[in-house]
Length: 251
Length: 246
Image (cartoon, rainbow over all chains, first blue to last red; front, side, top):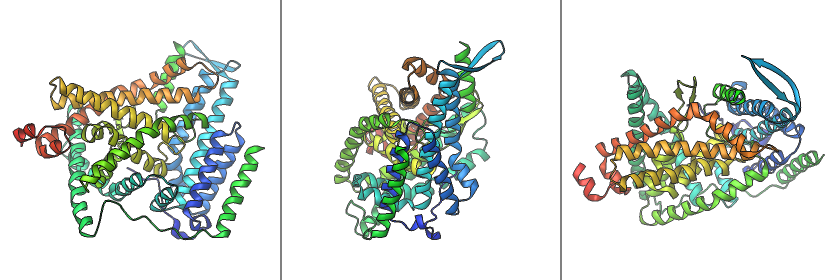
């Protein structure tokens, strides 16, 4: 499992130093603009800006490629789907094994529009994801009145995600070494055993963790990160950026 | 027919490893909002159930968090699908629905999807509502209903688990197809596009549903063999059944 994420907030980039609540609010505003835009250029501009910011933060091209690989494939599939199976105006056609295939101009344009929206929206979330530690994002979500229970469960999941992933890798490697994935029947059985082992591990860990937390005063709710007060220059900068994008969005 | 054949060809070749999640930005604003509104009450009910359970037992929130991590890991495991020559992945929601009930399972899916959207670009924030509805709501309720229904007519744990996993997977993908078709159809008619997308998922999802079923059955059977106390605690088995197998 490859986690295409990097907390690079410690590297001193301007965006990484910005208050996480402002980053989240600005990115949500930008996301709404991207998915509601009727054209192609605004989402593409947002995508280009997002990628440029990621590079300026020192995100490695390989990491960025991993992060964008799935959205790129999906954008391509949607583009092909819309170009060949949607629309009326035939742009060009060709034959495959006696079948006439038509590419439609209006379908192609619609496909490009959706593909650009995918890239723009992904770039927004990737940028805020690379610039903000996950726990700060959760604290910002809590500030936005996302229910406490959801935030707490997410924090528990995030805390133990990597531990359980390592355990899963160990069990999987052990199963593979014992030919546990040779043939369908054995593969299915091994995969079920792996899932069951993870559930048992999750249950036991949750019990141990609860005992440890109760001994340290856990009463059923976790403390959240405390936010420092908003700074005028940060708020102004975020507002200015959103306003500038808003003006571009309306053009 | 040629169009359907080509759709199948194109989409099976290009089916990404995480096709279950609707990608960020793919739905227009109105459809993204609709799915948020549809999914929100289920998440709220899940939170209510979680709070009620955690009043009695402080270990419930950590347990739900860790099971969300398990669902996250399972739904990130690339499984080779020979018929499609590609990889796909199970949902994992059947497991959480069988163990903790459908409402808490919706919450678990929400957490897994939120982390995937923010960290891995699987799914997205704008499509979170749609993804929660397909994987969390439909997946959890179908899995739970099938498992409990089959158990109530005397089916064994393995069989009930298998069909819960199988139908959870297929129901999730059908719902995803519906959401995609309604979101990207533009001025085209809905049903032909829905049929094309649903058909495109078939080569990958038919075998994957079987895998998901086998995985869920394997998980339940392993718990039954090694830790029947957990199944009793989670109300999958009665105390008497648990004692018999302990």
